[in-house]
Length: 408
Image (cartoon, rainbow, N blue to C red; front, side, top):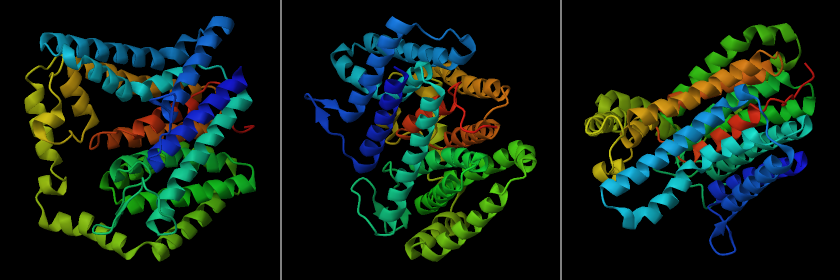
């Protein structure tokens, strides 16, 4: 059963990679997509597991799932409530379909967190996760350099920016900046030279992808994440006294030279325009791409119903999304919804700290905490969309209680 669970997780990761990067989502039996098929397989396996094997009773480990379920149920109830008070029942089917799509990523976390995996299968799931990160970044880099042409990844020659493997530069860069500290942690934990080299190449492609997307938010969040990781893990890294630190410095130098020598001229020009020249000749709101004005409008709209949020869609009212995940939740679900949403993040941190107390995978959990910090910073300026899928899949796999990727 545990091996079947591992295969279902791997199938889900492959489905997400194919769907998000190639804009390819083949249908089965009518409208059943590859992504949904992989999700339903996990649901079926979890149902079988609960029926025949029982469920894990560890309340400490399940608190994240509990608050995700509370958040989903709350969001569903207020959606129905707002539809009824606005006499919008005729549009309920579309609302339900949109609701499912919006919360698929949250549901995936709950399912994977509660799936039974043996240590070996938990480890393999982590390695598949690393492989998907490599594929996503490799496709972004190769497409930007003109080595391949992938429909779902476009390159804006005017501003020198790649849209990344999710088709949206800022969102994709936020995922990369979230995952990079986890890869660095794996690098320092590695005892296999070939695996270390592969992780080093992962870091090169990840850093290159952030540069190619030209995302100012990702630059900032990555910086905070890296500082956080090395502050948290400095003692652990120095205690190891292994060759990984020297190897890491070598890869850092090689990566910097490689990016500098191969980066497209349009990207260099775009970065200079987007970050330097734009700062010199723009107001603060213009430099933020109009975000300050959007946030002001968002708060003005929010106060119309501060407890439960408004019924209308912010984008339809203003013509743009909020460019702030927290504000989006606040406007659409009110203060209560934001509290439930924040509790999910709080208990992700608490669960990580709980696992840290076991004294295994310490560097990995430091990497995850640093990545989580990066993601939370990114949410201040972005609506996450596709990045949610890999954020919650990564969180559920990295925080499996029986994951142990080294013998330390």
